[in-house]
Every structure is written in C-alpha cells, then in structure tokens.
Length: 224
Image (tube, helix red, strand yellow):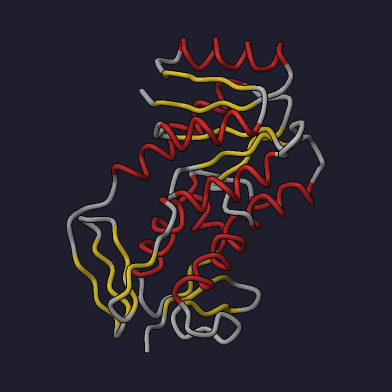
C-alpha cells in the first residue's frame, strides 16, 4: 500500500517490523543508520518515513530535521516509553506522529493508513484569506504570493481549522480529525503542529493573526 522508509538500529526490531509491514501490503526499505536513510531520501522518494529516535551517529530527531528540509515527507517517530522530551523535540523538528516502543505492528500500520487517508482526503478548492491562499486541489499554500511548504499533517490541520473560521476547536476534536487519535494525552501533537504552522504562515508567530489560542479550550482560525 505504501512505500515505507524504516530506520531502526536494533536488528531484531527492524526485521520484525519490516516483515509485519510487508505482510500488511507495504513496500519497506529498512536501514540501521540515519546516514543511509538520508541518502535514500535524496535518491528516491518514499511515501512515509518511520524513524527510531535513538540511532547511532545522526539520531532520529536530526534525521527528521534534515528530511524536513528536503520536502514534506510524512514522518513517524518510534520513541521509548516515557521519553516525553524525545516526543516534544521530535514534533518540534517536524514529525507528524509518534508511536511508543515496544511497537505493536497493528498500531503502526493504523497510523500509516491514517496518514495515507489524510493525503488522499483533500478536495479541489481554492481558499483565500487576505494574503493567505490555500489551494486544496494542488495541495499548496501561499502567503503574499510566496509558496509556503507545509507537511501533509500541517496542511491537514490548517484545512481543518479553515473549515471552521471563527469557531474554537478543542484539542480532542483536532486529534480525532487530523491524527485519528482519541487519547487526550496526545494533545502535544496539536500544539507542536500549530507552532510549526504559525512559524510558516504568521508574519509574527508570537502575535498570530490567523491561528489564535483560546486558553483552556483550543484554537480558532480568525483571518484578518
């Protein structure tokens, strides 16, 4: 179903996930190091990257940052249980989702399929809010005539907010709508993604004019 780049330095975990995901119908290319993964992304274009945070040499978070500079490839992080700092840093680096180790292959497959659904769900439409233009058919966003590069998850979240201008959307709703998550503890996915979007579309991210925080509730898209 998907061309997956898997990066995991533990040989047994890597082999197990590669086998399980292949049985789910995916095409998996697996590596043990971040350097190999970056070479693969530069020469080919997988549909999704799955990165272990703890890698020898270049760690998973740095690999995520470098992949993000190359384009909007969806990225899922594999993180050890309880390592909240790894999760937060990874999300700020541009990861779209994360799965806690030990990894249940069915859970990982579900996250992969959710990302694929998000990629396929955009419908042709052109939305204009002042200088901000969102072309859902072309999956492009521009600000004052300059194209803004968003990841698929960032674009999905922005589109969800744009669908409800002026309305406050709580984090639980956004988790379900964008990530297919139901655990409110994963709300940091929403917060980190909003921060990344603001850094790209807001003239002054610390004083946003498009996406506003409603403390204790969630976020509201209020174009000028």
